[in-house]
Image 1 (cartoon, rainbow, N blue to C red):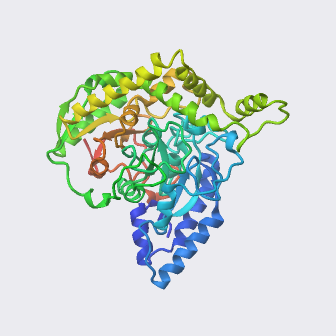
Image 2 (tube, rainbow, N blue to C red):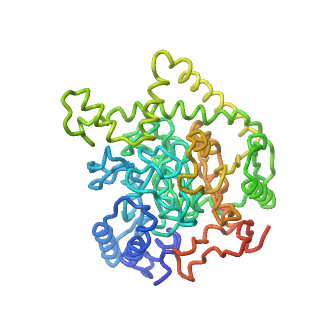
Image 3 (cartoon, rainbow, N blue to C red):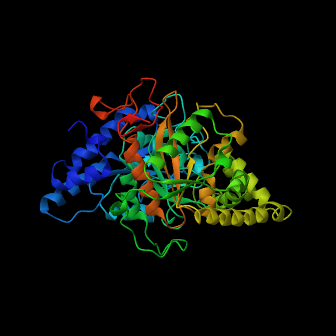
Length: 510
């Protein structure tokens, strides 16, 4: 079957369970696509075809025997390379961990395995999840499949590019300040960041412990809902996980949005790029036609989010990365004569420029003479921001924002660090407040680059966020569109007619 790669994960699982497609056929299809296209995209750091095919063959045998199979049976899944898979290298795209092999499974991957998911490989990322472009990997720069001269976003850029090019139907990423949603927007797919504590961080290499969350990147919103119904579970190895049972998010996707209140912080959006502003306003009008009511909410405080985030996140990162010292495991320099020299040279040679920069900044804001002025003040402002968001949610059911302030930029286009950090201005507040949010494709720029809209819900309302994402996706029909050059004629590629940047509603143009 030539079009296996065009199916959603939900559809693949259904066809496998019915006997229409074998797990081996599915695995071979995606492995062949990786072999063909990934040398150009560089979305994977490593793959394990032998392990992938062995798992697929086992599933085929179990199905023939009539054994009970899981919700993800037959579905290949890619894992960001800061999430442990036992027996596979976890490099965090860093020289520091180039020789580290995971000795246990992360909770997220263990839960996916329990539902018979098929591991297909580890994806590229910005080193230690520090970046917004996947230009900071120690191994390669991942390419955006929609525009080969542009970045896929970051830090989960490898996971996003692999899904966008249909090298895999579903992947896991991590989101500390937008690292799932921003690359999802740049690559024209769905990216979901759960409520803080919804998914266990056990087995995930930490960057910012109060900000990090594991979440899915998928071609379709229903696939993200499927993944979340499995990984959204309490874990005894992570004290920050919520004491809630997994929820069946798929069962609630079908309810329409009539009567729902949408909050828009228009004052926070005054400086949007023209193409972003136009598509965002069209998206808001579409939501109104879907039965929602639009309300303006006051969230001007969000303008401080970038400064706040880079104080809190770098402070936590400098603490979390202190264990990589060249002694216990990881990269160790040669020829050091003293312990101090071993530490200094191992960290100096093992970490890349962006990581060292953030460690230095984090160490600075935690220093005794600066702690009160920066870190403590930032935490107070974080509490105030959360309170303002709670007030906003008393006036609406869902907040919508653009996912990014621009479409995917070209490699080396942004040299100014501050301008690069501003790429996360619309995603960072979600992590600071621990909220659930999803980025969904909302259209294309005049250069045919994907753009996304972001649905943000109150804490623990993950199901509602996924429902908004699904209903919006159903109306616009962007998710079935594939980047040209990575699909056959049956793959419904995006037509380059110069009009593809308009929102298509049920096949028409709004």
